[in-house]
Image (cartoon, rainbow, N blue to C red):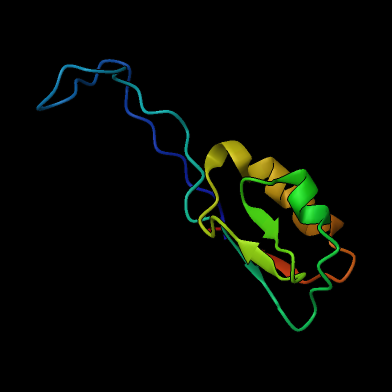
Length: 94
């Protein structure tokens, strides 16, 4: 699916508050990462690339710490998905 960008015109004003800029930053909406536990061998390449999102515990089980990927981590998570030697990670973007 295609990404959607939400911007307000520069002349738009916020209602009900006085903080921040009047222009919303571009957002990546609905990016989610999942793991197929049957395929995962806990190689931890994903954890090395994005430790804020992936964690392999002492029992060699992968835990996804943030299934909804923050925009600032999107590129690193995409790289982690590509780097998985067992293709156990999946990424869905709206």
